Image (tube, rainbow, N blue to C red; front, top):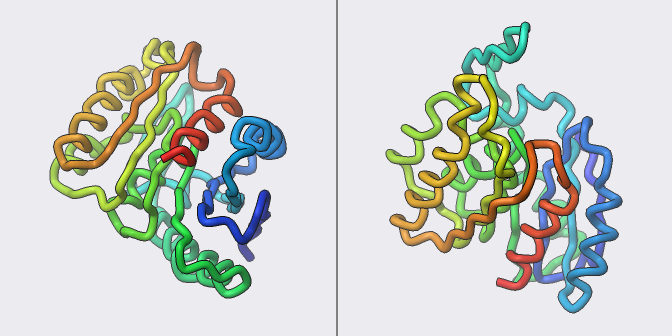
Length: 219
């Protein structure tokens, strides 16, 4: 059972699919701020609940050592989750609120930001991608984007300016990787914006998400 909550104007031309982890509790804050800052444009947000964060959001299996634990990202369900979005959630939404002019934005934070980027290489269903603090340090990601083409028209990327300041050998490369991500996308002809925010990975998540929404809504 997939839990989807709808916010805003369900008949709008722009629908944002927000991948929402169980640990993310401020979707109401995002909607409130977005309502204030993007009141001149009709939009709808479909908040899709992610029950198993690592399983559903990891693009492929890997082993990542974090702190004192070994997190195993095996038998990933990313393909299954993407299929549920494109083959079930969107069609059901379209059936209830038909709009032939509607475009979709896929949005996520952290690992869900990486999933959003990965999804843009799998399908052209999403006109825009909003990846805030995406986990572009993920093993194999840099190699993947060099060998594959993004199918979105516009991509918004952001990162905190302290996120790379960690002793973790993988995560410390996130700043270099996200700049490389922007470069690769630009070379593929994808309109790409990268914004650097103050703070670490957990600072001002609501504000960072809304900044991305606003940018893509204006486009």
